[in-house]
Length: 266
Image 1 (cartoon, rainbow, N blue to C red):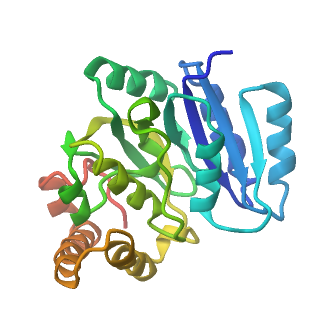
Image 2: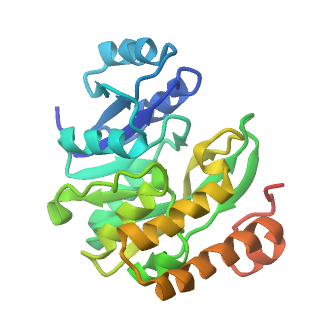
């Protein structure tokens, strides 16, 4: 069994969503993957559901945390146990299009890119399209500090170049922290501006609390990136302003390329 890409999926009480997520991996046209699912002490039937898949396909592997620790710790356990050259991320309620890995791995190999991301669709809990999120062709460390334009479930990075790089173990914005770590080792991350997955927007999701997320963004600037107070204020202002424009003025955001759709979030 050839394993070229390791897919890291943290789970917590995910029995209702995880079947669709796993099936989106099983349906990939690209076959050289392993799916590492890390359970963060679920109290529902998540383990039972995943074990059924793992019994049928040896590429699906289940790991379990001893205590509830959050997505960063779970993802880092997955990275630690990964065997593939490429590390990809897929959360337990998101889905990939059938050709996601084929297109993105080819994009990386063809251009010798080490860190890539893609555009994606946002859908509601009923699967209805809210908007298409486009991405810039490339982004560097300082550009990303202003706003995180990289969706976690769209990322692939090359361990042949970086080695295994782990997320800062904070409750939120840990993926953003990893992207910044990678961009200290390479000049650019490169975007494939094609929607290759669906991000489900849930009212009770961790990212739904905007104020709390903003607090962790500030924490990331000050405590993880060790930016000065003045520089942190500068980047946080960009982050906050762009967030307000995308949420409150989606038509304007679409005109300047921050949203790629005629269907906007309410």
